[in-house]
Image (cartoon, rainbow, N blue to C red):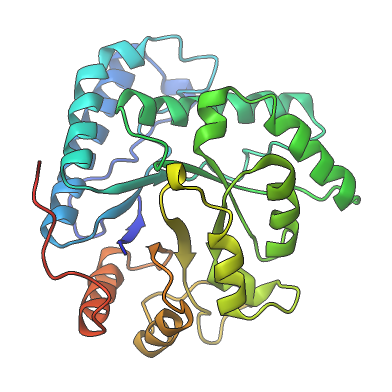
Length: 303
């Protein structure tokens, strides 16, 4: 079981997600920004290894405008050496990696421009992990998309467009249940037609479900992962007190997390904490898992 947090370490004086305005685009600015982003990513990886945080969602903004027509620079070639070195570090320390494209990536959109842009963004993010030479256990996480007033047709369009994606993208793609439109049951329907693994979100399941208990839902999701995909990834959070339904908590609620771990019912999962204070909650989660005997106290040794 690995614990992680998304994209940015709040305690660091750098971010791997620096970008700039489209109007300010230049190759010189792109190279400088990506150089700094990848240097910060290395610092985060090193921090995480030191603290036994072995699951990381990398930022979608490592290469600004990578999927935009304005960017014609061969960044893949320019940063190949740096990305390969990062990949070697990740593999040496047995880390798990994911990426989560922004909400504009919708592969069941009826709009051709939206669909083309979504494909381009997925290909860019997949290229990052391919250049790093990460295996298929490194995943690209998307939602079901829109309903457009007709969910059966929207699901059909998702399935059709999924098979139009390049093979390297399809190998990395996972679908996440959301809190408003696509429940676990809907994702299972998509899985049956595509084989796409389901990245389970416990908080979304609490907000939108079809009566499955948490333990039932976890086992159903785990059953969609094959050996080549690695063990199941999932997102974890809980409701922010006094806020609108679906708003994530600012910091981990330790008793709720302990209770959730019991509901895993023996499943081995890699848990991404979608919690505002990021590494601080992740550090607490690691200690809780150690106390419960669910996590080794030893950091993997580089190989």
